[in-house]
Image (cartoon, rainbow, N blue to C red; front, side):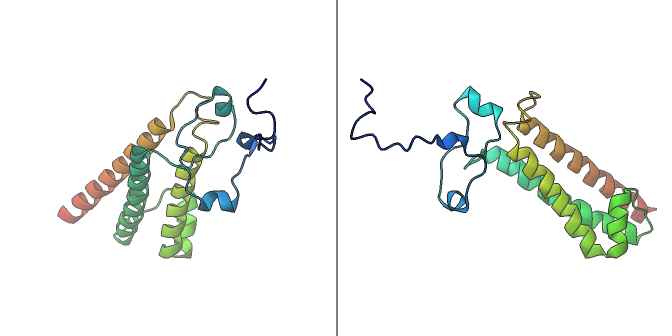
Length: 157
């Protein structure tokens, strides 16, 4: 006999793992899930309740570097540089604040997407999200270093 059958069985029969998107109530309640235990769960879109501290640090680093990049770009543009990215050049034509907001929003959306799809899509390609996020952080750091180099050579010359 199954120990869960009988009058003490309170299960509804609906498997909570098949819920794709959390409800507003799910987001407000503090949960504890930070990794997948079942191989079948890795085949679906899955949202975590908690994330590794190192992943959170990398995400914050990327977002801060994105803001630094935006302001350094604006500084270089005020000194005669040209924006080569046509999408960002379009937003620069509107105004500087729109440029900064769009740049930050696109970066935040990209990072959020990588974190969100950590197990469903990225695991399919066998690239851990941690490597992808670290790569983003390195690229942003290189861009900021390049902009600082441009500023230093422009000011010193």
